[in-house]
Structures are given as structure tokens and as C-alpha cells.
Image 1 (tube, rainbow over the protein chains, first blue to last red):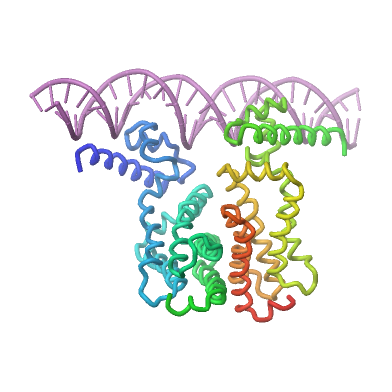
Image 2 (image 1 turned 90 degrees about the vertical axis):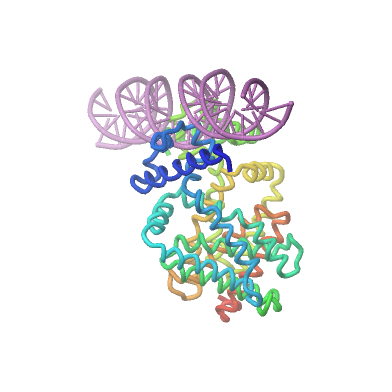
Length: 195
Length: 195
DNA sequence: CCCAAAAAGTTGACTCGTTGCACTTAGTGA
DNA sequence: TCACTAAGTGCAACGAGTCAACTTTTTGGG
């Protein structure tokens, strides 16, 4: 990796870092793009060459975490039912987060207290809908555009948004998956055991 | 109703009309707030006294249509299962719309081709989540904050968003409800028959 | 080794949604 | 009739995001 790409990555990180710090201290809406550019000592145009929007500054690291979802389905333990793997993954990342402690907690508080960020987060999350649909379809031998697989993917992903607004997020996720799991097994009696 | 309120309603309507016309002709993003205010012969400040945002200009009429959803559950034929009523309502309004013909079709095309509008529409729709949750809970005698009822409400409402992006919307709605209905009946064996 | 092309950054002005402020106008109610 | 209030105006501003023209590097090929 040449010097150019290293420098590029450096300014990118310095932007994301400055943004995170300022957002955590003053709140998302109280910090302007100009403030961030100023803090990272670049111009606003440069900032927008690195990040397509103000929101994107925050979810820079989070991007690959989201990819893990599809992997959790595709590369799950053989013999594990699909929905079980999904459910575990959604509950599991939560546990990992809890372990990391205050930093991630503060980040989540920031996101969940800013409507624009909640929405953006949701959008990013939902981008995997198609990939998940295909993973599920492939898994059960259904055609790639099977409506039932699409519905399952969509509704399973929605479980996260549902948890976001609930008093007890874990219970909410479990409730959603209880519903889906039973409905899914009824629809495909073979799906509950191994595939 | 005095003259003042009549005038207020008049400018409001003239704004909404101008907006709809311009949006349909040029597309949402190609029309600025200033254009609309100009066409209705008021200032942009006045426009924002009537509508809280650009998007709101379009969904002025649609607002009460959305309210019908909760009514469809609460005031359904006695003996009809809850989910059946919901499903029918979602498929039914679609049929009504088809009958109205080109105008509504064009409107829907406009909305569905503009990400900002899709999102706004979804938001409006999802505002009924709490009301629906309570209606469902009351219906089955569960506590008002029962997670399963909340999950069902959320996921049922989501069926619309799911349909929006699907090749065959009707099939998508049916697939979602098939899943939910089975899961729901498994969770509450008494819920499938009458209440 | 040098030069041209590509990539990174800068500057400054601009659009667009949205808000705030100070002001006028016109119904309304006593 | 008169004070009050709500609607509307004009203008200036702010913040996000874009655009175009221009200055650096950095890099790769002849």
C-alpha cells in the first residue's frame, strides 16, 4: 500500500475520530460538518469526498459488523436450524457489546437518542435484506425470489428495529423470533430439524 | 367556521395542490420549496406555517386513510380472527386504489420512486404501531406492553414496506401474513377461532 | 530520471430545506 | 370602535451537501 493510500486512510480516520469525539461530547445535532472539518483540519469538500453524509461519519467502523449477519446464516454450525442461528446472532452481538463496556454503550446511547441516526442505522441494516433472502432461499432450495423467504428475511431483520424501541430489547427479539420460528416451521415442516 | 379559517384552508389546499401538480410533473427532487410557494403565490415562511416539511405536502390527504387501519382491527366483524382482518384490510385498500385508477397509481409511482418519500410514508405508517399493539393486547386480554403483541403489530405493519419493494406485492403481503398467522396461532391456540 | 496523468485537497460560491425575527394586514370578539 | 390575535410577508440566516476551477502531491511508464 503506497503512501497515497496511507495518507488517505489517515485523513479519513482523523475525520471519523474527530466526528465521534465531538458528537459524543455535544450531541449529533449540535455539531456541524464545518466543526468536524475544522477539527480534522481539512475543508468540508474534502470531508464529503470521504463520507457521503454526516451520518456516515459515525458508522464507519460498524460497516463490517453488519456483514457478519449474512455470514452467521451461511456459515452456521451444520445441523443448526436457520432461525435459531439468526436469533442467536442477534442476541449474541448484544452480549459482545455489553462486554466492551462504556464506549459502545455511549455510542449506542448517542445513536438511539437521535432520530436521524436511528433511521440511518436501520437503513444500513436493511440493506442486507436481499442477501439474507438469497441465503435463506438457497438454504431451503426455494427459488431466489420466493416470497416466503423474502418475508422471513425482512421480518427477521426488522426484529432489531423492534428491539430498539422496546423496554426489554431481549424479550422483544425473542418474541419476534418465537412468532417467526413457529410460522416458518409450519410452512416448511422439514426446515426445523437440520437445514 | 369564520372567513379566516376558510381562507387558511384555502391557502393550505392551494399549496398542497400546487405541490402535487409540480411533483407529478417534474419529480419530487426537481421541485424546490421556493417553486411551490411561488406557484401558490405565498412566501416560503407561510408554506412552513402550514406544513412541517416538504414531504408533508404530499401526504396531506392520506393522513386519515392511515387511521383506518386501527379501526379495521377494532371494529371488525365479530368472530373474525384478528390477523385475518388485518390481512384483508391491507389487501383490500389495494383493491380500492386500483379502482380509482390513474391518479392514485401516478401518486404511488411518485412516492415509490423517491427514497425520501418512501421513508416518510413508512414513518407515518409505523406511527400506528403503538395503537395497534394496544388494540391487539386488549383483544386477547394480554397486558398492554406484552412483547408478543408488540412484535405482531410491528411485523404486520412491516408487511406493507415489504410489499413496496416486491415484484408481486400481493404475494408478498400474503407470504408475510402466512408466517405471522401460523406463528400467532401456535402461540395462542385460542386466538385463531374467534377473538 | 523526468513528465504526464491520476488522485487528494482547497477555495468559494451556490442550492435547498428550514428557522427566526420583525413587521404588516385583516378578521374577531367585546 | 378598539384592542387582540392569527395569518401572512420579507429577509436574513444556518447547516447540509454540491459544483467547478485550481493547486498540490504521488505514482507509473518511457
